[in-house]
Amino acid sequence: MSLNEGYHNKIEPGGTSAGDDQSSSSGARSSHGNAAAANSTQLHQQVLNENTYLKASKQAYFSDEKVLIPDDDHTNIGFSFRKLWAFTGPGFLMSIAYLDPGNIESDLQSGAAAKYKILWVLLWATVLGLLMQRLAARLGVVTGLHLAEMCYRQYKRLPRWILWIMIEIAIIGSDMQEVIGTAIAIYLLSNKAVPLWGGVLITIVDTFTFLFLDKYGLRKLEFLFGFLITVMAITFGYEYIVSAPNQGAVMEGMFVPWCSDCSSDVLLQAVGVVGAVIMPHNLYLHSALVKSRDVDRRQPKKVSEANFYFFIEASIALFVSFIINLFVVAVFAHGMYGKTNQDVLDVCTDKSMYEDAKISFTDNNNNTDIINADLYKGGLFLGCTFGAAAMYIWGVGILAAGQSSTMTGTYAGQFSMEGFLNLQWPRWCRVLVTRCIAIIPTFCLAMFSKMEDLTNMNDILNAVMSLQLPFAAIPTIAFTSCAAIMGEFVNGIGNKIVSILLTIVVIGVNLYFVVSQVETLQIEGGMLALVCVFAILYILFVIYLVIHMAACMGNKWLMNSRWVQRWVLPSQNSFSIKNANSTYASELTLNDTGISISSFNNLQRNVAS
Image 1 (cartoon, rainbow, N blue to C red):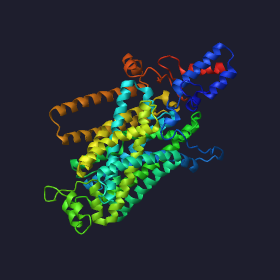
Image 2 (cartoon, helix red, strand yellow):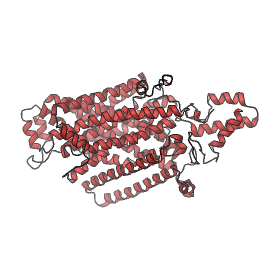
Image 3 (cartoon, one colour):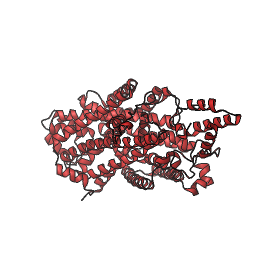
Image 4 (cartoon, rainbow, N blue to C red):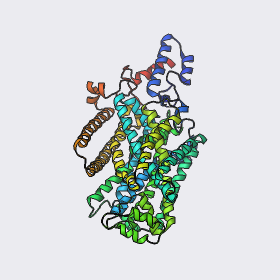
């Protein structure tokens, strides 16, 4: 069996592949040869097994079915739309995280606060997101392991558990935004007949219903997500056409990277846009979704082809998500910018939703304050300005955003649990646990809080998710920059520099947003001391991950440090770097055996001869 076959053949722990069975039966010429073959099989199982240890019936999403890639090599076509269609799916599911209700609310708030001035921030945040998603997808394609599974193999137990907890916190924060958004949409569409807590319960039921649609076929499930994205494009596009913003101003705001006369609130809003767009758990999700395609990892050409088509698909998907976000920003930039609560009430006087508007658009200064926009107020504003149809269409768009992102968030939770913890739970049990973790606190908030309390949580939840970004970005860069893991597909020096610099910028921006949110909460006394302790521990753990990343990149001093070997690098099933060349995991070494893969290859050739 060739080295690269370890990335393709399905080898259960403790078992042997068909290829190994055949070679051992035909090529066993001596007891030494049999022992060598057994040793080689064991090494393949430990190092090069691409599969999770979970049985197929207990895996999420893609375990029962993989999409076959058409073979167009004989036609000598440089670009194949048939292949692009076969690879289409994971990128669009990933892009839904860029369209969740938290993002939609950040969009409308940025439009209401800064008009078109920070559209360029949204554009470049999406581009940065694409670059990070590309790395996550490459990791899944090249290794056959998603990010959480790779963390399980590459980090020691304690940091692995901390990473899992942090990612779960990010998933819970995102899920709370999504469930709240869905509940608000149902509240609007039912004309307040269904209370917010009722909308949360409905979200639980329909999420389970949709998630079990994957039993009817992977492509059908992907079609459902594509349909929901189409609903968002149509509904928010309708609002864009009806409001008719100034197209010149929209283009200027998108391509002129400047914000003249912008206050600190506008700057904070721009930072919030970055924090809302780039979500940490989405990297874990995308690296897992690409495993749903049947890519022959024995052939570097096929792996390179998969990386190429996945990048094109992700680019198209994020372009669509950017256009939808642009629609939302422009609608409220045109209609809400500079408006006071009284301005909206004046427009709404003769409308059916006037009584609701009186309750929502109010302040302590005779309604002269600038509007503090949120999802619910956005719907009322559209209803007052453009008619009830606009409000209900807005509600349909928010419902599609909330429902689709809730389902993908549940998948992210499943991938995280099965990867970090190597859980052997049935799929339905993991779905139940991941839903309850997010639903229970959201239900309590919906039951005992007011509408404005729910919608005002968006900034806090964005800050919480921003804190978790290093725990996805740093492992992604570390693994894709490790030649022993990625082989010839390792990040080049340019990719390493760019990805690290961009990650530093994004993390710095997000930390600024978090600090600003903490300052607005005016924390004092014991709570402030607790926050400081958490900040110190947070920084220390980030430094720990950076040391691990530098070691993965081949820093000799760190690799040879006893402290790093003992406390940072894992002792089993780990990759260390030794003059890696252009093959898959060309010079891997098991730390606990000291046997290099090059020696292992020579051993196999001797056995086969």
